Image 1 (tube, helix red, strand yellow):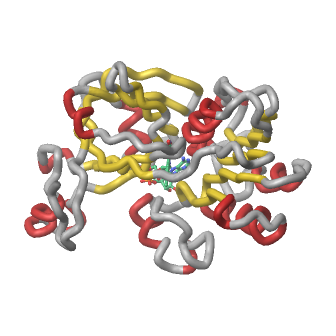
Image 2: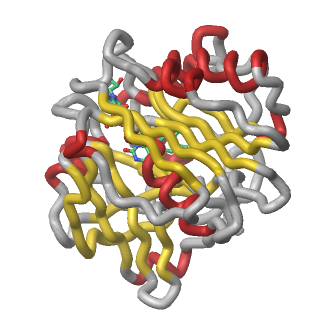
Length: 284
Ligand SMILES: Cc1cc2nc3c(=O)[nH]c(=O)nc-3n(C[C@H](O)[C@H](O)[C@H](O)COP(=O)(O)OP(=O)(O)OC[C@H]3O[C@@H](n4cnc5c(N)ncnc54)[C@H](O)[C@@H]3O)c2cc1C
């Protein structure tokens, strides 16, 4: 296996083609990716598995896979491919495809506008997957919480839950046009929250609804991901107030309001970007 500059083995980047697209809701588009590059895709046993998609400046005409160590020697920092993190919603081993569901959040950024405009035959290059969560049978109750960006991981998690599992899902979206059908065991209650507008710190209603939800008896496993400041408040709730153990709590910022992902990832090294005092996972 190839090694990076620090001598650590690196898995080859996966280069795939867009084979299909489907509008799942007003702001969620599914791209089905596949092709010969699937030979390099090593699936992971986690329902929040995520990939880091690399976006290169089109005018540089770089061809994937990208030799990032070499490119760092020849290109200024601002010309290097940048990463955007996305959940693998589904991997179909028979068809040799993966589905990735993108929130289309307007004209800002790279990945959202790219997914909105992606055409069949377009190329996608990524590293990963990483990830570590899955709903475990030894818990009495499963709490899954998030905004639009966590829908793919929550949907994938619900699909692997056994019929006897119980819990609650709370997802915040703009309005009912952003809801999708979720397959869940009968004992899992699903609650959609409507902000009535695109996300702003003023419009979000997620924390209030989570606090209002009845707290269950027994051992609770929590999956909670979304906008950074909301996640900081929910970390306080689940961890500090309800006493959920760190090991039972998958909670992180998937994005930060007003920050491009590069900036948001860099801030994880400072107090403004940290959800816990020290970061619990290597997710970002
Ligand atoms: C482990 C992990 C898994 C993730 N899985 C998914 C997934 O499956 N699907 C998905 O859509 N996202 C997912 N995300 C979130 C996604 O990586 C971010 O939303 C990312 O910032 C999008 O990149 P961009 O180039 O579109 O926007 P950026 O260039 O990063 O940001 C540009 C601007 O858009 C704003 N912005 C970014 N995302 C959103 C949003 N969702 N809503 C409103 N404003 C936004 C930023 O605050 C910034 O102001 C995941 C993140 C992580 C860490």
